[in-house]
Image 1 (cartoon, rainbow, N blue to C red):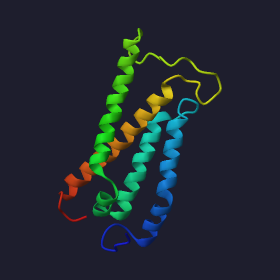
Image 2 (image 1 turned 90 degrees about the horizontal axis):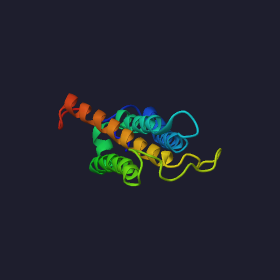
Image 3 (image 1 turned 90 degrees about the vertical axis):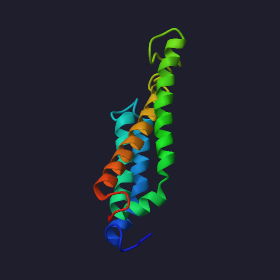
Amino acid sequence: MNDPKHGMTLIVKTVTRITVWLIILYGIYLILHGHLTPGGGFGGGVIIALAFLNVLLAYGRSFTKNWLNLKFMEDIEAASATLFLFMGILGIALGGRFLTNFLGPGKPFTLFSAGHIPILNILIGVKVGMCLFLVVWVLAALRTGEGGEE
């Protein structure tokens, strides 16, 4: 894990190992409370992508490729986009328009007060988080070559 030939210094790797989970947790918090506070799915997804980017910068591509399952990330990203589209079409199928709230308004000033918006925030957060990290991953691979130096 602390291979001195790849990535940054031991201090950066240690700080990353400690803080990456806190950053991911904060991104999840923003996604889950996006209908109550500013932020939401997009902001939380960006923060989660930046946590993965932090690991990539601190440890290098070879460690990150072993730590993260990139194929699984691609599949999750595609599934979240498909489910978001399904939620929109379900609004049409139940007699409304695209993305019509079909769960009801909920009770005001509670966590479940926004109908299906929290579900949409989760789907957007997953989509944005995975997609942004995969874009950075591809750009890093193009810059160094797939089998090149880090």
